[in-house]
Image (cartoon, rainbow, N blue to C red; front, side):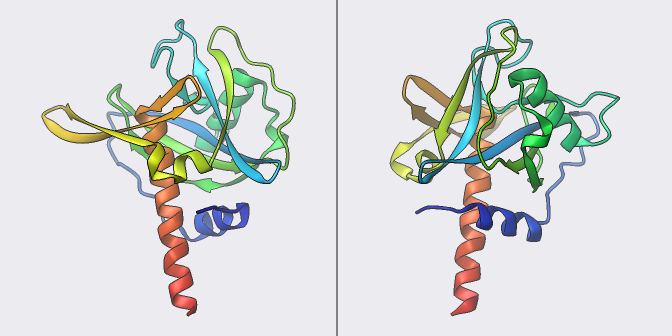
Amino acid sequence: MTISVEQIRKFLEGHRRRELEKSHLKKAAVLILFYPKGEELFVLLTKRTEDVEHHKGQVSFPGGSQDEGDVNLVATALRESEEEIGLPQDAVHVFGMFDEYETPSGFAITPVVAYAHSLPPLKHNAIEVAEILEVPVSLFLDKRNERVEKRVRLGTPLDVYFYRFSDYEIWGATAAILRAFLQSLCAARTGASRTEE
């Protein structure tokens, strides 16, 4: 199964975003940036350093906590991406926002979905980002690349998803958010194609 940029754009146009409405959670936003490379669609991820406050050494989306100066969560995702990996804000086209996701560390994360026609030259902030990773979207669409572990969080059993990319393990909020987005996108596409029949 493959997905296209147009399918992502159309999906977000019709998607009603789920918000957690939990005021005790800290607001944060991440950027899910899709872009073409050759004939394939890729997503941009980062490997965090061991010096950051949260999620040390993990693979994640660029992003972070909302600042008082951010006009909205889209601004947060774009500002953080520019600070972390040198991504110019005018190099991306924002399609919309996906459902909020609660992390064990007390954040309500808003995924901001965007597209770039090509990836501009990037320079990562060595304090926050150890590496910039370019991962093909097809990795997450193939169930054979998915591993599930049963965990318990605050007394509630849950499934934790893992994806292996080269020497990197993609899991936690990053894997969960991307998996949920792609599953919702594919379900909406399947539903649309059935309606058209």
